[in-house]
Length: 309
Ligand SMILES: NC(=O)c1ccc[n+]([C@@H]2O[C@H](COP(=O)([O-])OP(=O)(O)OC[C@H]3O[C@@H](n4cnc5c(N)ncnc54)[C@H](OP(=O)(O)O)[C@@H]3O)[C@@H](O)[C@H]2O)c1
Image (cartoon, rainbow, N blue to C red):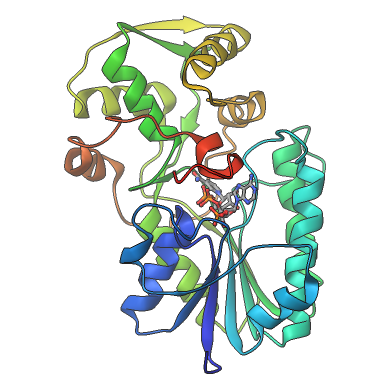
Protein backbone atom coordinates (compact mmCIF):
# COMPACT_ATOMS: atom_id res chain seq x y z
CA UNK A 1 0.00 0.00 0.00
CA UNK A 2 1.06 3.59 -0.59
CA UNK A 3 2.23 5.21 2.69
CA UNK A 4 -0.27 7.20 4.75
CA UNK A 5 -2.81 4.47 5.47
CA UNK A 6 -4.05 3.52 8.95
CA UNK A 7 -3.79 0.10 10.56
CA UNK A 8 -6.66 -1.27 12.65
CA UNK A 9 -6.52 -4.59 14.48
CA UNK A 10 -9.62 -6.74 14.19
CA UNK A 11 -11.60 -4.88 11.50
CA UNK A 12 -13.84 -7.95 11.07
CA UNK A 13 -14.68 -8.17 14.74
CA UNK A 14 -16.31 -5.61 17.06
CA UNK A 15 -14.48 -2.39 18.02
CA UNK A 16 -11.99 -2.66 15.15
CA UNK A 17 -14.87 -2.95 12.67
CA UNK A 18 -16.43 0.31 13.87
CA UNK A 19 -13.09 2.13 13.79
CA UNK A 20 -12.34 0.84 10.27
CA UNK A 21 -15.82 1.85 9.07
CA UNK A 22 -15.36 5.30 10.54
CA UNK A 23 -11.96 5.72 8.85
CA UNK A 24 -13.29 4.48 5.51
CA UNK A 25 -16.17 6.99 5.76
CA UNK A 26 -13.50 9.68 6.17
CA UNK A 27 -11.84 8.32 3.01
CA UNK A 28 -8.82 6.96 4.85
CA UNK A 29 -7.15 3.85 3.48
CA UNK A 30 -7.10 1.03 6.01
CA UNK A 31 -5.15 -2.15 6.55
CA UNK A 32 -6.37 -4.57 9.18
CA UNK A 33 -4.35 -7.07 11.16
CA UNK A 34 -6.50 -10.10 11.92
CA UNK A 35 -6.50 -13.87 12.10
CA UNK A 36 -10.08 -14.06 10.83
CA UNK A 37 -10.10 -12.67 7.28
CA UNK A 38 -13.04 -14.92 6.29
CA UNK A 39 -15.41 -13.94 9.10
CA UNK A 40 -18.97 -13.45 7.79
CA UNK A 41 -19.46 -9.79 6.87
CA UNK A 42 -15.75 -9.24 6.19
CA UNK A 43 -16.52 -8.61 2.51
CA UNK A 44 -18.46 -5.47 3.54
CA UNK A 45 -15.33 -3.82 4.96
CA UNK A 46 -13.00 -2.71 2.18
CA UNK A 47 -9.59 -3.00 3.78
CA UNK A 48 -6.21 -4.49 3.03
CA UNK A 49 -5.56 -7.57 5.21
CA UNK A 50 -2.44 -8.87 6.96
CA UNK A 51 -2.09 -11.42 9.77
CA UNK A 52 -2.22 -10.38 13.43
CA UNK A 53 0.72 -12.49 14.57
CA UNK A 54 3.48 -11.98 17.06
CA UNK A 55 5.98 -14.72 16.11
CA UNK A 56 7.46 -13.15 12.96
CA UNK A 57 8.53 -9.68 14.03
CA UNK A 58 10.00 -8.70 10.63
CA UNK A 59 6.68 -9.50 8.92
CA UNK A 60 4.79 -7.55 11.59
CA UNK A 61 7.06 -4.52 11.09
CA UNK A 62 6.54 -4.83 7.32
CA UNK A 63 2.76 -4.83 7.73
CA UNK A 64 3.01 -1.56 9.72
CA UNK A 65 5.59 0.26 7.59
CA UNK A 66 4.11 3.35 5.94
CA UNK A 67 1.19 3.53 8.37
CA UNK A 68 0.09 6.83 9.89
CA UNK A 69 -1.88 5.57 12.92
CA UNK A 70 -2.17 2.14 14.51
CA UNK A 71 -5.51 1.59 16.23
CA UNK A 72 -4.86 -1.26 18.63
CA UNK A 73 -7.87 -3.20 19.90
CA UNK A 74 -5.94 -6.41 20.61
CA UNK A 75 -6.64 -8.04 23.96
CA UNK A 76 -8.09 -11.29 25.27
CA UNK A 77 -11.33 -11.42 27.27
CA UNK A 78 -10.11 -14.13 29.61
CA UNK A 79 -7.35 -16.60 30.23
CA UNK A 80 -8.08 -19.73 28.23
CA UNK A 81 -6.08 -22.73 27.03
CA UNK A 82 -2.45 -21.74 26.74
CA UNK A 83 -3.17 -18.03 26.41
CA UNK A 84 -2.90 -15.94 29.59
CA UNK A 85 -3.20 -12.22 30.24
CA UNK A 86 0.62 -12.26 30.60
CA UNK A 87 0.86 -13.55 27.01
CA UNK A 88 -1.51 -10.83 25.82
CA UNK A 89 0.69 -8.20 27.52
CA UNK A 90 3.80 -9.69 25.88
CA UNK A 91 2.03 -9.71 22.49
CA UNK A 92 1.02 -6.08 22.97
CA UNK A 93 4.67 -5.23 23.68
CA UNK A 94 5.70 -6.92 20.42
CA UNK A 95 2.99 -5.12 18.42
CA UNK A 96 3.78 -1.68 19.88
CA UNK A 97 7.53 -2.26 19.44
CA UNK A 98 6.96 -3.25 15.81
CA UNK A 99 4.91 -0.07 15.26
CA UNK A 100 7.77 2.04 16.66
CA UNK A 101 10.32 0.22 14.47
CA UNK A 102 8.11 0.68 11.41
CA UNK A 103 7.96 4.47 12.00
CA UNK A 104 4.21 4.64 12.66
CA UNK A 105 3.27 8.24 13.62
CA UNK A 106 0.81 7.49 16.40
CA UNK A 107 -0.85 4.67 18.29
CA UNK A 108 -4.42 4.85 19.54
CA UNK A 109 -4.72 2.12 22.13
CA UNK A 110 -8.12 0.82 23.20
CA UNK A 111 -7.98 0.07 26.92
CA UNK A 112 -10.82 -0.18 29.46
CA UNK A 113 -12.34 2.17 32.04
CA UNK A 114 -10.63 2.14 35.43
CA UNK A 115 -7.56 -0.03 34.80
CA UNK A 116 -5.06 -0.16 37.64
CA UNK A 117 -1.66 -1.81 38.06
CA UNK A 118 -2.75 -2.66 41.63
CA UNK A 119 -6.09 -4.16 40.66
CA UNK A 120 -6.87 -7.59 42.11
CA UNK A 121 -8.42 -8.35 38.71
CA UNK A 122 -5.83 -9.51 36.15
CA UNK A 123 -7.91 -8.07 33.31
CA UNK A 124 -7.70 -4.54 34.72
CA UNK A 125 -4.10 -4.86 35.97
CA UNK A 126 -3.08 -6.25 32.58
CA UNK A 127 -4.75 -3.39 30.78
CA UNK A 128 -2.86 -0.90 32.97
CA UNK A 129 0.38 -2.63 31.99
CA UNK A 130 -0.43 -2.39 28.28
CA UNK A 131 -1.08 1.33 28.78
CA UNK A 132 2.44 1.71 30.24
CA UNK A 133 3.87 -0.07 27.18
CA UNK A 134 2.10 2.45 24.95
CA UNK A 135 3.15 5.50 27.01
CA UNK A 136 6.81 4.47 26.97
CA UNK A 137 6.88 3.34 23.32
CA UNK A 138 8.48 6.50 21.94
CA UNK A 139 5.46 6.91 19.65
CA UNK A 140 2.85 9.63 19.90
CA UNK A 141 -0.07 8.02 21.70
CA UNK A 142 -3.68 8.24 22.80
CA UNK A 143 -5.30 5.80 25.19
CA UNK A 144 -9.07 5.41 24.92
CA UNK A 145 -10.83 3.64 27.79
CA UNK A 146 -14.33 2.38 26.93
CA UNK A 147 -16.81 1.32 29.59
CA UNK A 148 -19.33 -1.32 28.43
CA UNK A 149 -19.63 -1.14 24.66
CA UNK A 150 -22.95 -1.75 22.88
CA UNK A 151 -23.65 -2.09 19.18
CA UNK A 152 -23.91 -4.57 16.34
CA UNK A 153 -21.61 -7.53 16.92
CA UNK A 154 -21.29 -7.20 20.69
CA UNK A 155 -21.19 -10.36 22.76
CA UNK A 156 -22.19 -9.54 26.35
CA UNK A 157 -25.45 -7.64 25.80
CA UNK A 158 -26.44 -9.91 22.92
CA UNK A 159 -26.10 -12.93 25.19
CA UNK A 160 -28.11 -11.29 27.97
CA UNK A 161 -30.86 -10.81 25.36
CA UNK A 162 -30.40 -14.43 24.22
CA UNK A 163 -30.95 -15.64 27.81
CA UNK A 164 -33.96 -13.36 28.27
CA UNK A 165 -35.55 -14.73 25.10
CA UNK A 166 -35.19 -18.34 26.25
CA UNK A 167 -35.33 -18.57 30.04
CA UNK A 168 -38.34 -18.12 32.35
CA UNK A 169 -36.00 -16.72 35.02
CA UNK A 170 -33.00 -14.39 34.82
CA UNK A 171 -30.31 -14.55 37.49
CA UNK A 172 -29.02 -11.18 38.74
CA UNK A 173 -25.82 -11.24 40.82
CA UNK A 174 -26.26 -9.52 44.20
CA UNK A 175 -28.90 -6.80 44.31
CA UNK A 176 -28.32 -5.51 40.79
CA UNK A 177 -27.95 -1.96 42.13
CA UNK A 178 -24.37 -1.40 40.91
CA UNK A 179 -24.13 1.02 38.00
CA UNK A 180 -22.87 0.73 34.42
CA UNK A 181 -22.41 3.46 31.83
CA UNK A 182 -22.73 1.86 28.39
CA UNK A 183 -21.17 3.50 25.36
CA UNK A 184 -22.09 3.05 21.69
CA UNK A 185 -19.53 1.38 19.46
CA UNK A 186 -19.90 4.27 17.00
CA UNK A 187 -19.04 6.73 19.79
CA UNK A 188 -15.94 4.70 20.68
CA UNK A 189 -14.87 4.84 17.03
CA UNK A 190 -15.49 8.59 16.83
CA UNK A 191 -13.56 9.24 20.02
CA UNK A 192 -10.66 7.05 18.84
CA UNK A 193 -10.37 8.72 15.43
CA UNK A 194 -10.71 12.16 17.04
CA UNK A 195 -7.91 11.28 19.48
CA UNK A 196 -5.66 10.29 16.56
CA UNK A 197 -5.88 13.84 15.20
CA UNK A 198 -4.98 15.63 18.46
CA UNK A 199 -1.46 16.97 18.92
CA UNK A 200 -1.26 16.09 22.62
CA UNK A 201 -0.81 12.60 24.01
CA UNK A 202 -3.85 11.76 26.11
CA UNK A 203 -5.70 9.21 28.22
CA UNK A 204 -9.48 9.56 27.96
CA UNK A 205 -12.57 7.57 28.82
CA UNK A 206 -15.14 6.60 26.20
CA UNK A 207 -18.44 6.51 28.07
CA UNK A 208 -22.04 7.10 27.08
CA UNK A 209 -24.55 9.70 28.31
CA UNK A 210 -26.58 7.35 30.54
CA UNK A 211 -25.60 5.67 33.79
CA UNK A 212 -28.02 2.94 34.85
CA UNK A 213 -28.03 0.14 37.39
CA UNK A 214 -27.38 -3.36 36.11
CA UNK A 215 -30.99 -4.30 36.90
CA UNK A 216 -32.23 -1.33 34.86
CA UNK A 217 -29.97 -2.36 31.99
CA UNK A 218 -31.31 -5.93 31.96
CA UNK A 219 -34.91 -4.71 32.33
CA UNK A 220 -34.37 -2.40 29.35
CA UNK A 221 -33.11 -5.32 27.26
CA UNK A 222 -36.05 -7.48 28.41
CA UNK A 223 -38.55 -4.79 27.36
CA UNK A 224 -36.80 -4.39 24.00
CA UNK A 225 -37.01 -8.12 23.21
CA UNK A 226 -40.55 -8.39 24.61
CA UNK A 227 -39.91 -10.75 27.51
CA UNK A 228 -40.92 -10.55 31.18
CA UNK A 229 -38.86 -13.20 32.98
CA UNK A 230 -38.79 -13.50 36.76
CA UNK A 231 -35.63 -11.87 38.12
CA UNK A 232 -33.87 -13.99 40.73
CA UNK A 233 -31.24 -12.28 42.89
CA UNK A 234 -28.38 -14.59 43.82
CA UNK A 235 -24.92 -14.35 45.39
CA UNK A 236 -22.22 -13.77 42.74
CA UNK A 237 -20.80 -17.30 43.17
CA UNK A 238 -24.15 -18.90 42.35
CA UNK A 239 -24.61 -16.55 39.38
CA UNK A 240 -21.25 -17.70 38.04
CA UNK A 241 -22.29 -21.31 38.56
CA UNK A 242 -25.48 -20.67 36.58
CA UNK A 243 -23.37 -18.96 33.87
CA UNK A 244 -21.03 -21.96 33.77
CA UNK A 245 -23.95 -24.37 33.34
CA UNK A 246 -25.32 -22.38 30.40
CA UNK A 247 -21.73 -21.97 29.13
CA UNK A 248 -21.27 -25.76 29.11
CA UNK A 249 -24.52 -26.08 27.13
CA UNK A 250 -23.37 -23.60 24.45
CA UNK A 251 -19.68 -24.68 24.62
CA UNK A 252 -18.52 -21.21 25.58
CA UNK A 253 -17.26 -19.15 28.50
CA UNK A 254 -20.30 -16.98 29.13
CA UNK A 255 -19.12 -14.84 32.01
CA UNK A 256 -15.92 -14.78 34.03
CA UNK A 257 -15.40 -14.02 37.70
CA UNK A 258 -13.23 -11.04 36.70
CA UNK A 259 -16.01 -9.60 34.52
CA UNK A 260 -18.56 -10.12 37.27
CA UNK A 261 -16.40 -8.49 39.94
CA UNK A 262 -15.47 -5.58 37.64
CA UNK A 263 -19.17 -5.05 36.95
CA UNK A 264 -20.17 -5.18 40.63
CA UNK A 265 -17.30 -2.86 41.61
CA UNK A 266 -18.66 -0.30 39.12
CA UNK A 267 -15.50 -0.33 37.02
CA UNK A 268 -17.70 0.14 33.93
CA UNK A 269 -18.57 3.67 35.06
CA UNK A 270 -16.50 6.70 34.06
CA UNK A 271 -15.54 9.60 36.34
CA UNK A 272 -15.25 11.95 33.39
CA UNK A 273 -17.83 14.01 31.55
CA UNK A 274 -19.30 11.59 28.98
CA UNK A 275 -17.89 11.94 25.48
CA UNK A 276 -20.40 9.55 23.91
CA UNK A 277 -23.80 10.90 22.86
CA UNK A 278 -25.70 7.86 21.60
CA UNK A 279 -28.27 6.43 24.02
CA UNK A 280 -28.57 2.75 24.73
CA UNK A 281 -32.39 2.94 24.83
CA UNK A 282 -32.44 4.07 21.20
CA UNK A 283 -30.12 1.24 20.20
CA UNK A 284 -32.24 -1.31 22.05
CA UNK A 285 -35.34 -0.09 20.21
CA UNK A 286 -33.70 -0.23 16.79
CA UNK A 287 -31.96 -3.57 17.29
CA UNK A 288 -34.79 -5.33 19.18
CA UNK A 289 -35.61 -7.67 16.25
CA UNK A 290 -32.11 -9.11 15.94
CA UNK A 291 -30.65 -8.75 19.45
CA UNK A 292 -30.15 -12.12 21.12
CA UNK A 293 -31.72 -14.17 18.31
CA UNK A 294 -28.54 -16.23 18.14
CA UNK A 295 -25.93 -16.85 20.78
CA UNK A 296 -22.60 -15.03 20.24
CA UNK A 297 -19.72 -17.29 21.22
CA UNK A 298 -16.43 -15.81 22.36
CA UNK A 299 -14.67 -19.16 21.94
CA UNK A 300 -15.97 -19.54 18.36
CA UNK A 301 -14.95 -15.99 17.58
CA UNK A 302 -11.41 -16.13 18.88
CA UNK A 303 -10.25 -19.48 20.17
CA UNK A 304 -11.45 -22.04 17.63
CA UNK A 305 -9.21 -21.68 14.59
CA UNK A 306 -11.57 -23.39 12.19
CA UNK A 307 -14.68 -21.48 13.28
CA UNK A 308 -15.75 -18.57 11.08
CA UNK A 309 -17.79 -16.75 13.78
N1 LIG B 1 -16.40 -5.09 24.20
C1 LIG B 1 -16.49 -4.28 25.25
O1 LIG B 1 -17.59 -4.07 25.83
C2 LIG B 1 -15.28 -3.57 25.76
C3 LIG B 1 -15.38 -2.73 26.87
C4 LIG B 1 -14.26 -2.07 27.33
C5 LIG B 1 -13.05 -2.23 26.70
N2 LIG B 1 -12.96 -3.06 25.63
C6 LIG B 1 -11.65 -3.21 24.99
O2 LIG B 1 -11.79 -2.91 23.61
C7 LIG B 1 -10.88 -3.69 22.85
C8 LIG B 1 -11.63 -4.42 21.76
O3 LIG B 1 -12.61 -5.24 22.35
P1 LIG B 1 -13.61 -6.05 21.43
O4 LIG B 1 -14.62 -6.62 22.33
O5 LIG B 1 -14.03 -5.20 20.29
O6 LIG B 1 -12.63 -7.21 20.95
P2 LIG B 1 -12.62 -8.09 19.65
O7 LIG B 1 -13.09 -7.31 18.49
O8 LIG B 1 -13.31 -9.33 19.96
O9 LIG B 1 -11.06 -8.40 19.48
C9 LIG B 1 -10.12 -7.37 19.28
C10 LIG B 1 -8.86 -7.91 18.64
O10 LIG B 1 -8.21 -8.84 19.51
C11 LIG B 1 -8.03 -10.08 18.84
N3 LIG B 1 -8.30 -11.17 19.79
C12 LIG B 1 -9.32 -11.24 20.68
N4 LIG B 1 -9.25 -12.39 21.39
C13 LIG B 1 -8.16 -13.06 20.90
C14 LIG B 1 -7.57 -14.31 21.19
N5 LIG B 1 -8.06 -15.10 22.13
N6 LIG B 1 -6.47 -14.69 20.51
C15 LIG B 1 -5.95 -13.89 19.55
N7 LIG B 1 -6.48 -12.67 19.22
C16 LIG B 1 -7.57 -12.27 19.89
C17 LIG B 1 -9.03 -10.10 17.71
O11 LIG B 1 -8.52 -10.94 16.67
P3 LIG B 1 -9.28 -11.21 15.26
O12 LIG B 1 -9.09 -9.97 14.46
O13 LIG B 1 -8.55 -12.37 14.70
O14 LIG B 1 -10.71 -11.45 15.57
C18 LIG B 1 -9.09 -8.64 17.32
O15 LIG B 1 -8.06 -8.30 16.45
C19 LIG B 1 -10.20 -4.65 23.83
O16 LIG B 1 -8.95 -4.11 24.16
C20 LIG B 1 -11.12 -4.64 25.04
O17 LIG B 1 -10.42 -4.85 26.22
C21 LIG B 1 -14.04 -3.73 25.14
